[in-house]
Image (tube, rainbow, N blue to C red; front, side, top):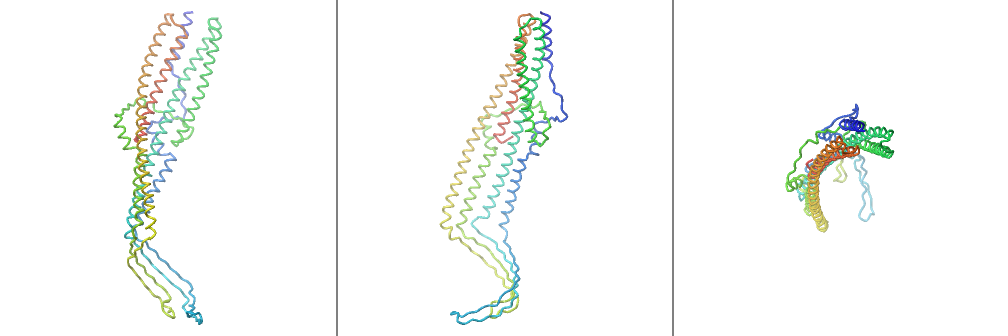
Length: 440
C-alpha cells in the first residue's frame, strides 16, 4: 500500500510541476500594449470617421474667414428688347416708340462690409472653437479606443491563464482517474470515488470549452479594433505584469484629471461658444456699414426718347448703411435666449466637473483596493505553498491521505490563479484611472 501511494504521489507531482504548452499557430503574433495602441489608432474605423469631422471643422474656419473678403459679382446679358408702348395718363392716346432690339449688358459689382457689430469676427472665433471641440472629441475617442484595447488585451491574458490552468487540472484529473480505477479494481477505493472524479473531469471539460470560446470571441473583437484578420491569435506581452505603477496623492490626481479630462475641456469650450453666440446675436442691434462699387456697360441707351443704339458705361461707388428695424423688438428676446444658453452650458460644465471628480475618486479607491487585494493574494499564496509543503511531509510520514494531498494542490493552484488575476485587475484599475483623467 505504501509503495502504491508513493507512486501515485510522484505521478501527480510530476504532472503538477510540468506546464501544458499550447502548440503555436502560424497566425500567432505577440504584441505589447503600446503596439496594440498604435495599431488601433491607425486602423480604427471610428477614429477615421471622427478624424473627418475634425477636417470638416478646419475647413469651416477657412470658409468663415472668406466673409472678410469683398463680395465680387459680375453678369453678362444678351437678348431681345421690345419697343416701348406709351399711353397718356387717361389712356386715351397710344403710340409706339421704337427701341433698338439688341440688348447687351455687362456689369461688375463689389461689396465690402466694414462694420457689422463684430458679427464676422465672432463667427470666425465661434467656428474656431468648434474646431477645438472636434479635436477634443478626436482625443477623447482615441482615449476610449485605447481603453477598449486595454480591456480586451487584459481579457485575453486572463482567459489564456484560465485555459492553461483548466488544461493542467484536466490532465491531473484524468491521471488521477487512471490511478483510482487501478485502486478500484484492487478493491482499495469505492465506485463513488470513480464517479466523483468523472464528474470533475466533465465539469473541467465544459469549463474549458466555454473559456476557450470566450477567448476566441474576445480575440476576434480585438482583431477588429486593431485592423487584423480574424484568424490572427494574439499573444499578450507577459512582461506587462512586471511594470511598476505609482500614483500621486488624491489631490494631485484630481488636479491632473481636472486639467486633462477631455469631456471637461469640451464643456469649457462650449461655454466660450455660447458666449460668442451671444455676441453674434447682439450684433443684430447694430447697422451694417459697407463700401460698394459697381460698373454697368449697356446697349442700347434707354434714358432718352427715343432710345439710342449706342453703348453706355456708368460706374458708381460709395458708402452703404443698412439697418434691420425688426431687430428693435427681435434682439431682446434672442439675447435673453442666448444668455439662458450661456447659463446652461456653465451649469453643464459644473455638473461635468463633479462627475469627473467622483469618477477619479472612485477609480483611485478601486486601484488602491486592487493593489491591497494583490498583497493579500500574495500572502495567501505563501500560505498555500506552506500548506502544500506540510501536507506533503505528512503524506510521506503516512499522516495524511491522498485526498488531502489533492486538496492542498488544488488550493495552491487556486491561489496562483488569484494572484495572476489580481495582477491583471491592478493593471485594469490603473488604466481606468488614466482614462478617467484623460491622460491615457
